[in-house]
Image: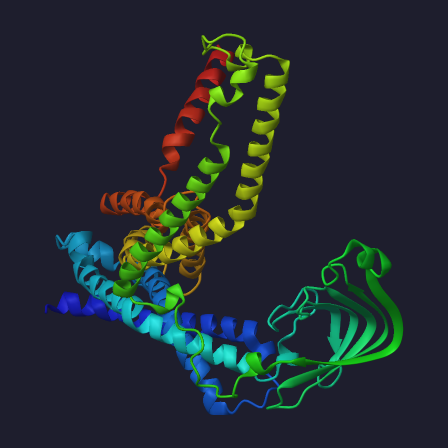
Length: 482
């Protein structure tokens, strides 16, 4: 390796190591801050907290690496330009392409490392981190309840309250509970001004004590006869204090934090596993579509016209307007039959549309994850070809302007990636296109910057815009003077 290559690599690696560690720390702290409420105050030992941070850091590496490459390339090339080292290299006949050649090779290596992380380490880290977080969250279910929205983590219960307070965060305000645990299908609704949760670690029950509330239960589903439904359709009462227990054994489990409960999520699989699973999901989805289409076709199949032969006016069938072949009674019969079939088909579609949407969305999750990992593997290379020419153009090192530019570029890249993923998950675009949306935006930008940097030009030629305007006013002024 030549001295010049060693010097360029040294100039790049110094800021790269620093920026990578800083970005990794910031992203891990962001996730820790988001999950802090569900971890703090549960008596979790430090080794498990460090495990959680370790798995989180492993999962964040594929995101932190492209940001570090982008920022360090701007800083390194900007520092070379700021110290007139570019000018010295050009005077010695060394082109920009020759200067960045070792960095391109290094970035290709980083892209390979990123691919290995995404394919092997990322699924493992996600599996461990999600299950550890889930088990910590369920260690004290009362702590996992979030104010302001319905909490459905506890089976057969929908729990909502406005505020959670007290030293142990177990006191509630404005409580609303939907109890769906009745075997007869009756819905029980409980509201209260205040409430308290009592739960002991390892217990299979969580006790709710509610104050100043209202109780309502619908009995219509459990009573079969109309007479009984009219006699007692529901029961209701007000109370000063109401206490009941909820079985949380299915939620808490045996309390082992290392237990792996969730294993089949799309982001917990390698590319080979995703590639094996996607065809199965597609075949299942296509079979479901075919079954639903067959059902609708069987519902809407029109009866043979000769079933209405008694109302036929003539034996010759008018194909332009079928109804003209029948008398008024036949027309009414046909229209009523068509209306019933359409209503039945519409109800069938309405009842199955949510299930079809979710099955399609599940398939899109796997598809987007597969193509997204491949696209993210190339992000180091793509962002380098934006950062390197941009740094040589602005000729500024340090953490000031390069940091601002790197954040702006990555936000644009991240926004495009997220938008494409969301559109793909909603079936608005294909998963392949959604995974490469940000790349399709960034590659032309990188080519443009590379050409400008190679020709030793700025990002924009300001004179090309301002000079025609100045010349116009000069001509206008000269004519006025004459």
